[in-house]
Picture 1 (tube, rainbow, N blue to C red):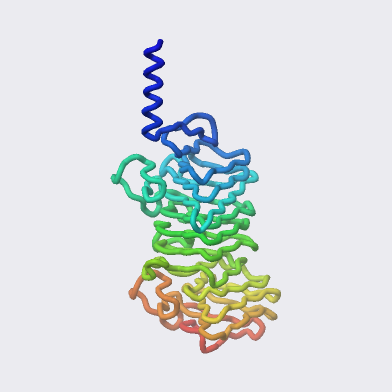
Picture 2: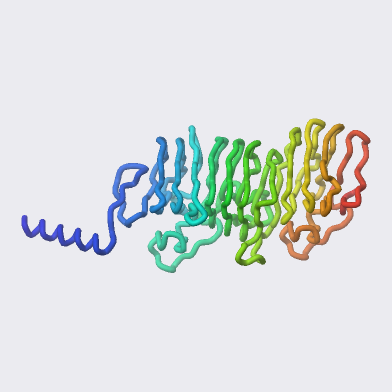
Length: 361
């Protein structure tokens, strides 16, 4: 018995010296070797906090957060490509992921050795790429916050998005979206997909680069001029379809768009600004319209600063205004009739302002 006890003591000493430990999975029972790696193996049904000194590997298929999940600054969350590619809110689920500038929260690929080291244990045999994991989806629930978060190598989802806010509101501030979304010509959703987000949703001071599409929004959302659509360290590194893609609900509220680096893209053949609605454009804001798309101004509708300095309404193919938004280089050029135009329902006529380009009227 003494010999057995002695061997156990020696083995424990070796493990401690080598830096190995058993970490309790705070998502459920069971110990997992590997220091600060915590495997998440089933849904979260009670208020839970993930610490900033751990790497969390999602290994639960169809993983739901049904209560409040608080994620501390510095936490790294990696998604297993087959066993845990997605995170979806359910029940009364909310994510409060508030990092800091010096300790951002990272949502990334299981293959990403640059964040948290070689978690999948294969050395340099694999490297991360877009679509390595799916998405985080708020699933119609309100109040989630993502601040100082990095969303990397996602987009293998039904929306080809990495973060989806639909039929609810969320706050996204000071975040980075990079290397996401593998969909090319088809689809309409951005790496940050707020296509069906409700009023009160916010995207501010975020950075988007090396995504297929960076950002999609609903026309419930105000957008200021704080977001960046290139890599600040490599300004030439942008997004393939470098624009803000709008799901155009008819507007019956006060809406403000101020973004000047990229264009807003409209895909609606009958997009109404209603009599009780208004759209305010900042100077140098550009709206690009897909083929067949147009805007309708109802009687009493307000299009504020419609002829402001640098404001244009133009074709989706017009690279001279805010760059190559349709992502085809020089393969297409704009021409008259590329989109319908801006129709005044009160006068039953189309607007002919000098800043309307390549429409049908």
